[in-house]
Amino acid sequence: KVAEVALPRLREFTSQEIANMVWAYATVGHSSPELFDKVAEVALPRLREFNSQALANTVWAYSTVGHSSPQLFDKVAEVALPRLREFTSQEIANMVWAYATVGHSSPELFDK
Image 1: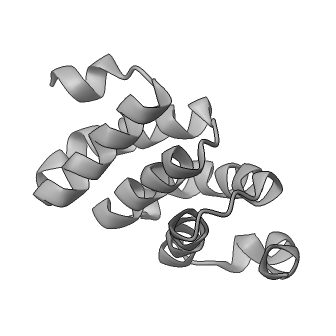
Image 2: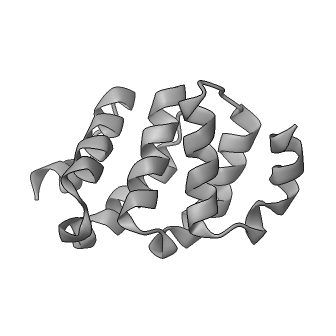
Image 3: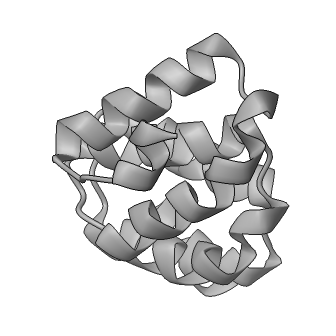
């Protein structure tokens, strides 16, 4: 299984590879709670490395599979806020959809 091989190596993944991994799992509709938990743990301190697409795709993936990670969503909002002008309209739409879908209120992100 991919998750079994990837889990112990996630710290080796680039930010784009991390985002691609959860995006792929969500796209095929496969929730892997252990993988998504570990990705959040590994990604949290590295979110400033993520480009706008990777940030949007990551929260989209968590929302799509219904995997709750309030800390991840809080940190993505914090990192994204000063960089919102870098986001495409699709990335903005995906991001606000993700927050709404999981019911994660982020007034700083939505009100600015």
